[in-house]
Image (cartoon, rainbow, N blue to C red; front, top):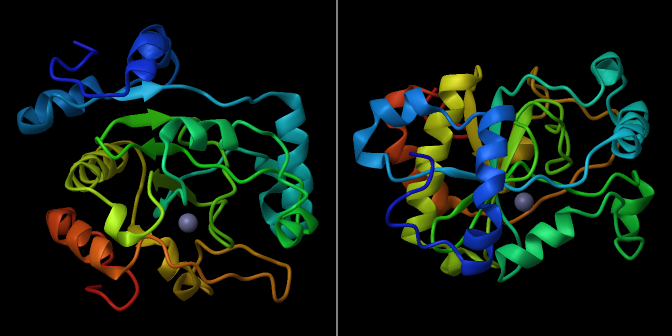
Amino acid sequence: MLWPSKASHPRRLRDSARWLVILGALSWGPSADGLAREPAESARTILARPVTQGPQREALVQAYLHAHCPRQLASGSRITPRVVVIHWTGGRSLEGAWRYFNRLEAEPGRAELFRQGRLNVGTHFLVGTDGAVVQLLPEDVLARHAIGLNTSAIGIDMVGRRAQDLTDAQLDSVTWLVRQLATRHPIRQVVGHHETHLLEGSDAWCEDVPGYRSRKPDPGPDFMRRLRARLADLALDGGPGGRR
Ligand SMILES: [Zn+2]
């Protein structure tokens, strides 16, 4: 069954996304096998609610890659995910975050971001405070969410503005989602956005603009410590400063 029996998703999403889940199953495929192997988590599913794609976005990706990661130009927006980067959205609502990520072009008001490329920021998944998981982009399509890792990393954005906003339901869903992703891609590492600078120099890193770096606070060490404890059996790299 595609729809969880005890769904607590926001009504607007529940009403509007039912058909998108079915479409998503055709194109992206929530992992029925994975669900079957994990009965304790079988009530979860991914709601597919794609953001705008197409030739205009592809052109923005090409322009971004030309400046930031020319070695990826031949592959365009297609990536092989090897890393998962965990974020918070900086906002209170899943709907608002979705609308923000649905814009193709970055806000001119975010001057440095805009100067470094007109491709808007993006993410692959949003996770609501109730644990609802919404997919915005296919997992192998580049999203601009972490400097240096956009050509290798899937982004997961939890709705929230600070560490105290993050819920146990989000931790449960992110844990489940990372497990799903690890069945489909050669995921080696799960890191918080606040840790991504520590991967500079690894083969997952690609950022050719000198000095274009950032340090972010999300989602913070406490969340990553709890997530890593849940995922210990996957034997991923422990992340910066962690178990190798
Ligand atoms: Zn972030």
